[in-house]
Length: 257
Image 1: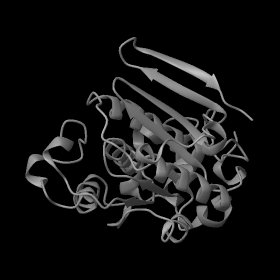
Image 2: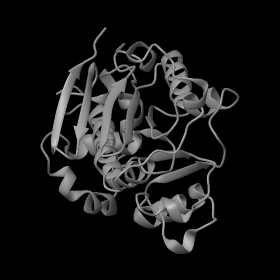
Image 3: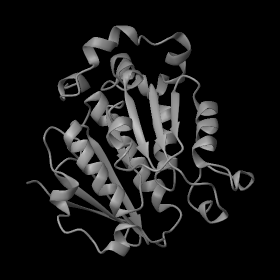
């Protein structure tokens, strides 16, 4: 079985011995450790991993929760927004009493309660050309949970230059899509979507979405992160996965270069 250290990210041999699981950690992750393709060694890889989640909204909520619960050693969350009542229909990390508070502050509190063994770093700012390289360079994998094209193209550019896998997801209406960019010299967002939208669309406009859709796509994004780290299964690279909730269907589209 191919492990994370052989995918080009290469910290497994260096850090594995430093990330042995404690008795409490082994008990917490017992149902995951009993999977033959993960086991103790896979769980130690998760503990050694550093994952950056860009966006703490509809996708960022399930992604950060499932990665934290799975035992990722360090998670960074970038978002400059505050909780509003219109978020609560889909952003399940927050509650009514959290309104007007910064999302990253609430996220850190909730995730620390969920798993005290996971280190949570928060960046109460918008990811832009000024800070992207400095922030992303500290992590092994980046998860795109944004809702605007401008940030997506920026993430794509920076992750490409830094050779960081980028787990992409987007949602709209009753549908969503998912793939992994820059994995083992794989495709990029810009190669899949070479024509940039209009200036108005680039800056982002609110879109309608059924509340459960982010849960579906966000859970799949977290799954891809875990697969990349542990080396289990086939990473969704070179394939765009489309989800249609109204038809209860998934469609795979080959997007290899």
